[in-house]
Image (cartoon, rainbow, N blue to C red; front, top):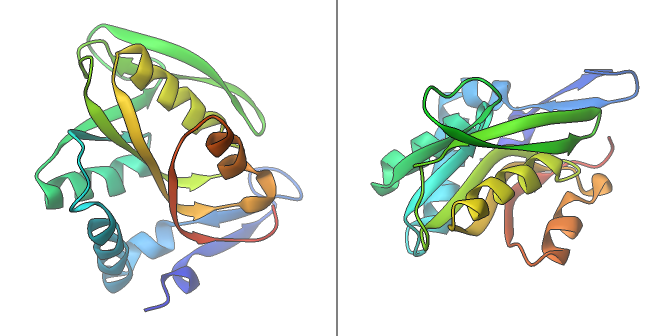
Length: 175
């Protein structure tokens, strides 16, 4: 099944000149979503890790689904002000400015091994922010998994240069 064909491109969103890769059309397609999750399950069912962490918001969808399939716990990495208990925070760079990510202070323990998931990798700013939070808690990110990579923005190159492992299901040329 060609799941790439199920990803919609929205021109000029959120800014002029940007070609936004929208996975909601992939998520809407039952067979496409099933195939996406099958591919992730195939990749991770024999890998050693303790938890799956997902970055708000689309990383929650695929991360929680995979956690359920693999019998793992799920850890949400959220935007500022969304978590109810004590948190740690990090400000990170976006393609269009800065934002803040948070994780519960008690979400992970030293030595925990985490698979981190999100829908898309662009410049790597959000990924670096989430990795920093996980590492501040003493845990290790074993791999960062995404559905879509935008190679022209060099997120994978930046993450790999810092020693991080990345897995992508597909890539799209252009911004």
